[in-house]
Image (cartoon, rainbow, N blue to C red; front, side, top):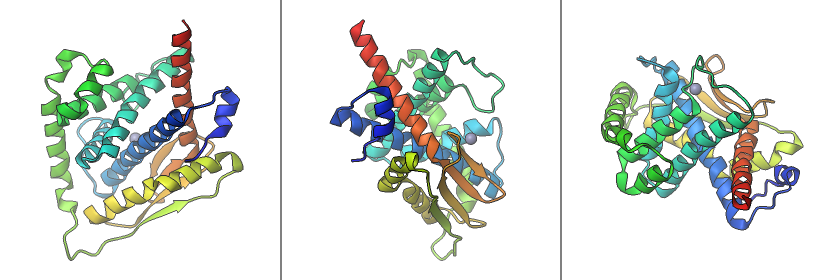
Length: 263
Ligand SMILES: [Zn+2]
């Protein structure tokens, strides 16, 4: 297992083996969901999908739905990490004195967390019921989650149906590129490669959708904790710095727990 020692040393935190494993799961879960979100923007652009409402919300939903439909334990765990990630980001920003940005293209972090949780609960109450409760989802909001999830899933199925790959279709390529990184980002690159996140999403895309053109899933150092769809270059970009940001959030959570225990 990879050790993200740099940030830990700076924080004077030594993680147990279990915490180290949780950290890797947290980073991988949030990275996977983020790339599916960016792939959603790519689909909207490449397939010219009509969007009624905020595109950011629509592709948030798509990312969650795709991961839910994979129906495996790892995807389910990754989705929980994603919801947790949005809550932590909200808490972290709050403590840093950042104000909520109501003009942002994205919904607020807590809204993104609750929307994700609502879909998890709506998709499978048996698997996600306990987690939903733990995350403090208000009871009265749960009633509509199954219908909300089903309606959104059906809507995405409908708009993507014309682009589903048929047996004899030729397809364009989805390439995966890991760009070189400065030395401080090497552990993040190695971790991403080990988890095969980009390759798994590449496989998901090329085996399910008939693409109108080639595109690339690319991990790069961008000096910014970000991920985005570059329509001109036809590239989904994941910045290695975003993985470092996820690590920072996880360590923030650990430190919060330690502080709470002391009090
Ligand atoms: Zn987006």
